[in-house]
Image (tube, rainbow, N blue to C red; front, side, top):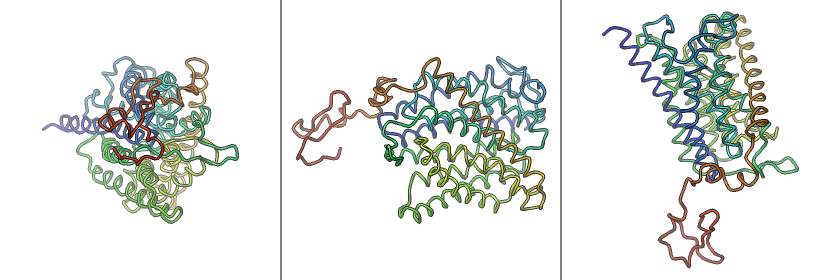
Length: 434
């Protein structure tokens, strides 16, 4: 079989795995938020996959991979990029599909950080802007052959900086401007914990993301005959496992209990951090990167809380902070150019610059989008909408039909709140588990 056919099959499958990660984002966020907002986070993922996909196909791909202008932006391939020239045997359509999955992932990072209080119209606007402009412009700098950072020699194999740091720090600035959920922080600065609605659901989302990440990282070879495929896959697995292990044991030591949400985010942090260097580092280095990412996510989460920034799913700590760390880690652990492996400081300097650029670009882009939404469609849900829950306010349907659930119980045992449809046990009655 000719190589082009094998590559086509491999890249299309890898693209499908990356797009399937959106199911992981949906379940993860639905499990981490309160029940009254589970439909809303799912609908935002549908916005990513529909509106976001079209915006990237029409505009974003051309800005990212079109004819270069001074290393900063592309100016061709708009409205149906069918004739892109690739250096490997692969149809352009397969490449566009794969890159589309990456663009969609970038906006989905923002989705979790702004959960439970953002105006749905504002999110639609941001999905368009991130997939059409924010991500593609920085992607051009890093991944276009003529991009100014690419010419410096930056190494970001599958996007710790391009996707995760940019998306994570855009999420940080948007969440800061948006403000915390009502009741999240007290006047004395202390934080109230909003318990996740469904940890098993969030875990299922994490498992799907973990599975899709093999397509995310290994698929970035674009070449089924590339011998590095196995190395990339094992490094991806080892970093995820060590990130989760570290978070698991650290929470046991720090809090006295094995925290499931921190363990989930430890796994995801390992995946984010190794994404830049999965093709360049050894297996032992991948484990070290994972261990360090598991430490970073815990203390970054505490830092964000101390700054009074409300991030319901920990997206900034997972993607933003570990995207930056993963980018810098390449300069430390790269097998041929890393400071700790060869003693050379040259690559590390370039990676630090790239990480800083990704942070600044994400932060400034997030500020611009938040302010634009504020002036046009409105950035934040109203107090009434937030109190009622965004599921009913914006979509007219709850995630779980509680009236249906308790319909067969004697009415003397349970009363029903007409406004919410939630069964409430009357005073001094024995609680019945549905």
